Image (tube, rainbow, N blue to C red):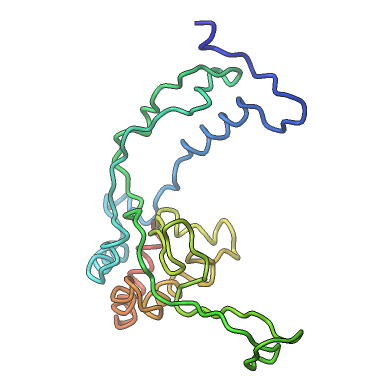
Amino acid sequence: AAGRELEALREPAGVDLTDLELAQVEFYTRTLAVPMRRGWDDAARDWSPEVRAGRRHFERFGCASCHVPEQRTGVAPGSALGAVVGLVRLERPAPELVALSGQRIFPYTDLLLHDMGGRCEVSRETAAGEPCRDGARCHWVQRCTGLADGLGEGDASPSEWRTPPLWGLGLAQAVNPKAGFLHDGRARTIEEAILWHAEAGGEGAAAGDAFRRADRQERTELLRFLESL
């Protein structure tokens, strides 16, 4: 039992973060709740008409095929560092985090990779953009189209991205007014991010095009729904 409960670890000189401190940060980030949704009418005991209509458009446009509304968590193992006990010590092995296991959640993602369209090409050019072969004024230049960025990661190609969760989307710019959208922040608004799906021509093109062809009221209702998440 003495080996299972450890006092706050005395780390070697030069270590900035102890195992206990790291385990505390890990526990905090794993159990941090997502923001509460907006748009609920307490008096009517229902979502606002715009949010309900927007949810229907979300399904009809095909957004939910990748941004799957509902998931269920599996078993959430305890930290490899140990369980934080009383904020002052670690206990090993850490038990399962019951609060995170087997939970019905609504992250709006399938957690899968999708080819979002676009490609990157590398060429040699001068500063003026003219083709060249060699010389001090000749530079390597990479140009990308669509949502590709030229940076593969693991087995993912430069145009493949994991479907990001949408919960908390409506508060992104409330927290940071300069926050952008999409994987690299290129979209200034949620609407612009949706239209990039259509422009890029990848797996999200049909949903993005459906939004582009919708009338103003339908687009507004979809945006109100997304802002409620």
